[in-house]
Image 1 (cartoon, rainbow, N blue to C red):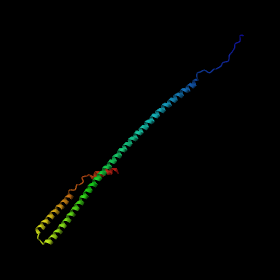
Image 2 (cartoon, helix red, strand yellow):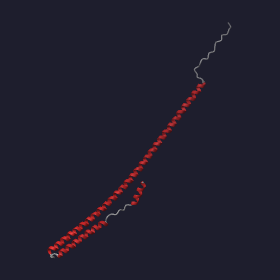
Image 3 (cartoon, rainbow, N blue to C red):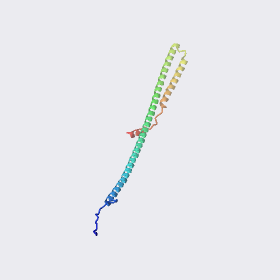
Image 4 (cartoon, helix red, strand yellow):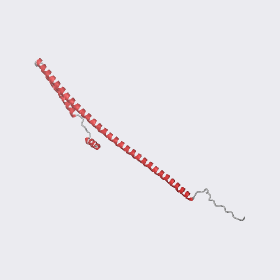
Length: 175
């Protein structure tokens, strides 16, 4: 019995993995981690760009609003100046109309006095010549005072001291 017994060799798989599979797993893990890092960096950059665009847009909107407010304020000043000028013109027209009315009233009063004096002289045949002349000189004095007063209204009317060139320049800048 001295025969040797040869047992067959069996390769039993062990619990350790093949070194090539280990290398593929390591390369895959590194690739996934690098993709995550790169994706995070791209995400942050995109978020920063969006924030910068929003800041730029809000700054532009603020400047446009300021410019529009300045334009509206300038339009309001121009409208106010035009309203003041129209009011001044209306005052001058009213003063001229009042002066014409006073002159017309004075002329009508003078005619009425002349008519009354003529009527008195016809009725009395010269009994009150002194009173008639005094009345006519008083009426002439009154008419002269009214005429002088109406002349003062024309001379005393306020003149516009506004610089129309500045207003024209401002209006031209809006076109």
